Length: 486
Image (cartoon, rainbow, N blue to C red; front, side, top):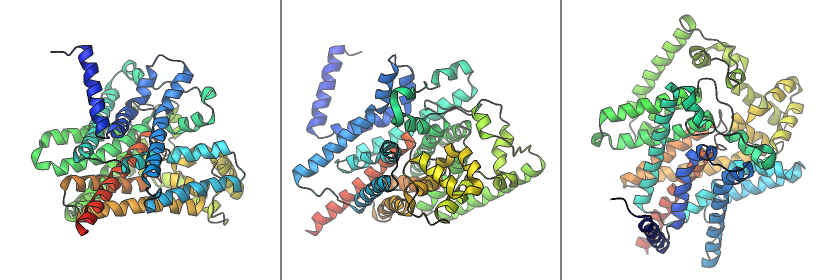
């Protein structure tokens, strides 16, 4: 029997009162944002409102997160707690002030520099919010399963889109962003979150395939780990079918790096589970497969090394064998793509002694890099828009060696935390969470050399969300151990 509207209303009121009494309102707000973000572009596309309203809605969840962060600091002040509780917080504060100092040292545009910084660290606030909560095992399990379900929804949708007619896929093409109404903050966010699709690729409910593939990689990690954990209790056929769907979805985004990481993830997970023998067998299998691909690309496949990525994004036809086989050709590596950018960045930063960065303003930083490496100036300026794809290199340009070291130290400490939980925690659910995040850290570090992964909205949100959950659990264990010692 369907409940009356009045009954539904009072049930919501009762639920709210109970959640407020238990101090769970903040958790459910963050949870709602986590569910909303993968569908944000699709929802905004079909929201009948003026452009300025849509732009406000695009940033509304960030305003909510910052408000919750202010509540965290207010609570610490009221309770007399230390504002800085861990080395992670101290490293982050140092990184933030280092970036601000560079703004004045380089006399760069304040708004542009701050917005570049905001795009990188905006979801660190989620980490602080989650760390302060009293999370239950049920809530942690709910978060992991929800992310997995969202990933499966996107995986099945992307698979359907790949075979569906264009009229169906047009329903999911994101609405153009009116940059004039939003200014520089909108422009930076649009560069990261929006963009044209590669011809033939599909994007689910995201702005583009970069967002889709990075989210699918995150969900693929959780799926692999939960499948291994519940291997005996789940259907082998169902697991294998979901594996095919998820991996085909990665293929359908036409993101070669996502496909490669999809192969690497099971090996990393098996190493964390201490199953090195099985991992080594898979590595040998991959090596044999890679050899066959290289052999095939030399003699049987039509590998076109002149494929132009920008032309693909502008709607030109794509030769799939040539596109995916391109990475196995020697000319591809000699021609210079991301590895060329890394070499150029090192020449401009390390080679010229500019170890403290060029400018937090991305546009000014690339222009300065072009001046420092005059032999490649025209090519640097031509590829200005894609230097952030090598994001660790981009951070080296913006914030120098100290900035990269501080940001890397944060992930080092988070990784050490997950290692402690993996090694000493007897709770299988918590070990699963730790292995999920440890795998995510490893993948993120390497992903950062080929994509602006730390800026991508959905991926960045879940990265810091899971970081907060891991540190929350770790802190809870230490508090319990201190009580027993007393």
